[in-house]
Picture 1 (spheres, helix red, strand yellow):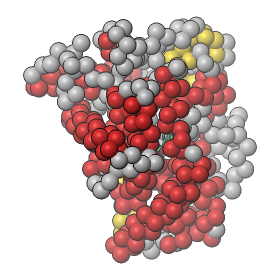
Picture 2: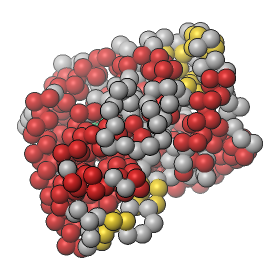
Picture 3: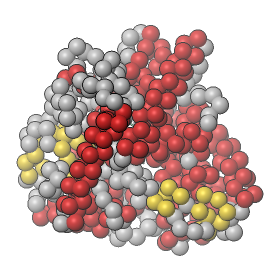
Picture 4: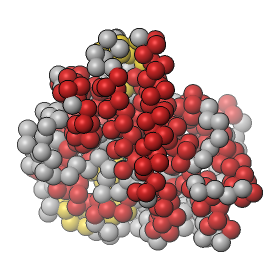
Length: 455
Ligand code: HEM
């Protein structure tokens, strides 16, 4: 249980813990530990040389790279695919507890002794206490559940992503992109992230969840705070932003649940409310799932558009897209391989497992470096070259694999294609107009600020 401390004491305790953890990690990074380097500047600004080293280390060590951080990593296409598909790995510990949970008691785990699920805050937990945010930065719903809970919940969300709905979302994505590009063109110079790559997926998600009157800047702020939390909490300020964002989102979704109950529609919340009434989902699970759809659905797609334009400009292939906007789907696939929005994920062994001759003990964690798999020369020829005409012979792992394969993959591809195609058609002379500022993150990668000029 988390006792409620006065705010200043909680902040002090949290600040000290973050500083100690960061200092320890930085010391290891400075001594050359590649896993620690993925978490720290300057190395994480361009993690690809570190991935290459991890692939070499893993090859020398029989498939799994070890690190003094205590976290192992798999870095090749073959080993990443193997771990993602292996049912002996999960996202929780073997007994259902959350990894990295310092309280380590069943009351805070998904499989609580009293049967209560993790997404339901305990009465002792103050959701606005930033200390709570360090322990459970955000409830990641499906991403933090193993079967059978994962299977049950995923089944409920799946119909929202049915192919027949995609066409409807495509029409609205085109409409929104047209409006955003009109506004941007009128200004001449604009921020590709804030003015196109972020508002587009926010509006698609809002349609998916049927959220009325979306306050885009507010959603973008929540998304940034929650997206950054995938790396853990990086400061007291971040912890407060996170606690505020989660509290706001809980209010928003609690309100939506009530509205949908009174007036059901075709959207995912209405389907979940139906399941709630049938008692196949709890209110806590419902709210967390809606929150996941929001974060998973727009921070990632925002990065896809930003990373694509960045790679197109840097490789000189922007003109190829302008000459034939029909290659937008190929540009999306090549971006997902070359510089994916989600760089890595993690799994935990539910029993002793052998990978490439190395034994991983039960409950040990392994980073699955999705972005490294995309640059594996054993899977992709000349992998460090961004080539929009590449024949994709091996599937990239940008959307992960196994039971957690991205639910929104088709939607994300569609949004990326619409944004790139219309951008090339409407702004063929698009050029950078200043320094691109990258996002400060390890898990998510993309431009935070990307000034561009129309021509
Ligand atoms: C380019 C954009 C996107 C990328 C790169 C991406 C990437 C990923 C990855 C890597 C995972 C699995 C993580 C793991 O295995 O631990 C995942 C899961 C998920 N994604 Fe996406 N995603 C994108 C867009 C979307 C969109 C648009 C939505 C929905 C609106 C979405 C919803 C989800 C959900 C619900 C899961 C959890 C699936 C599960 O655990 O069963 N994603 N995504």
